[in-house]
Amino acid sequence: MVEQFQKKLSDSPAMRWTALILLAGAMFFAYIFVDILSPLQDLLQTQRGWDPVAYGHFAGSEPFLNVFVFFLIFAGIILDKMGVRFTAILSGAVMVIGAMINWYAVTDSFEASSLKTFMDGILNLPDAWWNVTPWYAGEPASAKLAAIGFMVFGCGSEMAGITVSRGIVKWFTGHEMALAMGIEMAIARVGVAVVMLGSPVIAAITPISVSRPVAVSLLLCCIGLISFIVYGFMDKKLDAQGAKEEKDDPFRVKDIGKILSLRAFWIVALLCVLYYSAIFPFQKYAINMLQCDLHFSAVAAGRVFFVFPLGAAAVTPFLGNYLDHKGKGATMMILGAILMIVCHLVFAFVVPATQSVLITFLAIIVLGISFSLVPAAMWPSVPKLIDNKLLGSAYALIFWIQNIGLYAFPMIIGSVLKASNPGITDPLKYNYTVPMCVFASLGVAALLLGLYLKIIDRKGGYGLEEPNIKEEPTQTSEQAEA
Figure 1 (tube, rainbow, N blue to C red):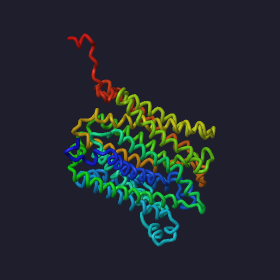
Figure 2 (cartoon, one colour):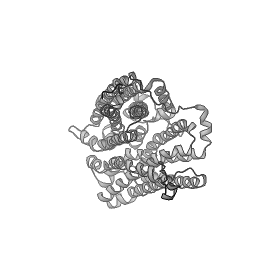
Figure 3 (tube, rainbow, N blue to C red):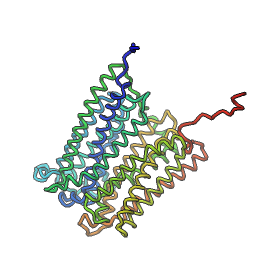
């Protein structure tokens, strides 16, 4: 029998999965660019003069505008007003612009340009407690300009992140939405693994160049922009068929006071910032740490560390499924914090002492499991703790607080690394014991908050330990006969 109505484009499995590939592919390329310089810390020091402080200020610059100019909020407003199609293309273009600036900053051409002379003379801010910017007196000009590019890129990548989520909801409502979101996140995280393996290999091609991997990732960002443009044509056709875009709860300034007065909000927000600050900034230093502790090349260190993002991507869907059906959300957060503490202490003391590749592999794998445990349990717990009317604004504030940590801790670790290695200028001879202890201390604070969260859950009955999916009770034969 011939159907008498026209199906929407999203009803076609081939079309909606194509849309997902375009969206997830763009985020995959964005994740590659975010960490493209992470495995090249030693080259940045030898070729561009970036000591740990300069590198830390660059690494922390990505969230700068999101934190201090509240760009995350503006991105949400743009998405609400202009829709997925426009915002996706805009975010892709902003990422390309930021990536171009970042790439030019680390090229030989910049080193010989008048722009370098200009950058040497500006943004020389005092190294004082009030200087919360990525710039300071004595910072290499290339690091200053790269930080500008990275913060522009960060605006685009954060905008892209919320836009892709909205796009998946638009195309997969009534279909495999949870699966699609899980796959998109897994694909994006694989981008980090690709960087750890590929960036040192590309840089090592004769002649060795720190800018070559950045040029490749810039090209990938351009492909990501093209993916968003192609998606835009599909999205326009879907709109023409009457598709309606699901809107997130808008950010409301009037809700800020109510949210900030909630004890549960502060526990989750602080748990979030502590945990993520011990993971993402760690990724920025992990390759150099392995180079110093195991006497590996960047290529060999990348081969060891790449199992971390792959393991996290593989384990997360299974943990989410367990949380849905069995619960134990607060317990999972506590266990994740414990595993993180153990792993960072192993990196601080055991790996340098033993130089064991096997122990290093095991610690990285366990850290990947920890990285899956906490986010898988934390984000579904927020709706249980905070009223639905405040949920959109609460998420926005949590992301903002999280970005403060992602901004500050790369700089803190860079300064700690330099201070704990006085007189050492060889980037392959740093001792990472103190920085790893800083990361472990964040885990201890997260553990204490997790324990406190479990206590208030027991008293308040928030249901953090209960499964997300409530199973209907089965009737006994006597009840059925009655």
